[in-house]
Image (cartoon, rainbow, N blue to C red; front, top):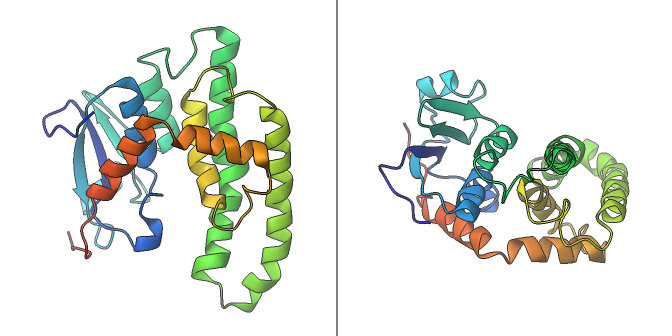
Length: 222
């Protein structure tokens, strides 16, 4: 779906990030969910360099995304995915156990896998020349490999985590993408195939294009 300025759904996102972060900012998750559901949405693009003071009233740490949906405003990408998916069983199964499974996998992606990916990014990008980072990296990579191995076992031969494609896969695929450059996903063929399957979806491609199109070339202060 195109970005529609007067849509009742609005995603607050950044208007600029460094090149290495483009395509990885977490407003990609609600954009992807909207594309899967055929929901248009508006953008409210804010400065990542000089974040507006009133944004901290919506998101205590000044991060994105924030979603406005009519009278509802909420932050945290996982919560936003659950909110959007409640509209339509295509992204959140109707069965009690299937819905519970999909919800659990959203939390697993964001709590059991993503924190290590954040740390790897810190080690490889922001602190790569620091002695502590060089010492930390081998143990961190081994830990991630263990998590990925267990995830691969849990996925098995299923195309997606819980039956059909769901918000569980949006959460997990966006997390796994953070391990591609380090070569950690490629070590697990099932996960590599799963990630390829998720990111080959037309809705992902549209969401990615929309995020990339929203970025300015240079940072602009609020």
